[in-house]
Amino acid sequence: MKIVFLGTSCSNPTVERNLSATAIQFEGKWFLFDCPEGTQRQMMQSGVSYMKVQAIFFSHFHADHFLGFPGLVATMSMHGRDAPLYVFGPKGTEEQIRKSLNLAMMRKDFEIIAKEARRGKIYEEEKCIVEAFPLKHEVPCIGFVFKEKDKAGEFQRKKALDLKIPEGPLWSKLQKGLAVKVDGKVFKPEEVMDFSKGRLGKKVSIVMDTLPSESYFDEIMNSDILVHESAFLENQKERARETKHSTAFEAGQVAEKTRAKQLVLTHLSPRNKDNEQIENEARQAFANVIVAKDLMEMEI
Ligand SMILES: [Zn+2]
Ligand SMILES: [Zn+2]
Image (cartoon, rainbow, N blue to C red):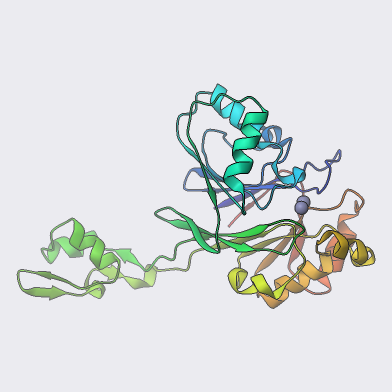
């Protein structure tokens, strides 16, 4: 799994930072979290393929998270995309997507499947799932968990063949942990699975615009990477409360309380240019923290 920070600013872009968007690459596909203006060029610079974007997940529809969408759709269309594009977001997503495409007088040659995300699992592939959960912002806003599925163990083909279990649905049953019957004889998963090769899937949580709140702690518990907004610093707390945002210190507290392995701060106010200051503030609550830079990549 690879995470690319396409942009890391909030409100408006700066010379150093484009507006916040994050991309995750998994099994050859890209999953995009928010799509503000300028995202296309950031994708180009970091080698994120337009055509391989499987789904876009919008935290909310404030301009600094959304305005790049019609332009990206136009480019996909121009390059002859025909695969459907999944789009998820908070309440009102279908209408918002329709309006934005109308506004751009868009003709597109592929299907856009827009869905409102409710709490819980919203998207699933063979090896990963995406879950959504509500945040506390000025407008409906949601956070996401991208999770690689746990691997129970490795299926040993040779053993199954030696035991004369026919290839097909019985094999997948065994892989799912169920016993099967062949000619009256029962075979248990442990006879063909090497459970020593099992492992827990990686978990990345993406929390954009929000007041820090225990209401989303359960969902993001034990993240390998927690990407959390930190628009402000503690000395700007009044402004953070007014606009319903978190400070760097508060993001650190969230990481600490939810036992994250690593915290990445993003969605930074253009006023806060000193990365070290932002990082140090969060570090007072949580040690393993970094401030994201545009086009920064992380492999997990
Ligand atoms: Zn924002
Ligand atoms: Zn916002």
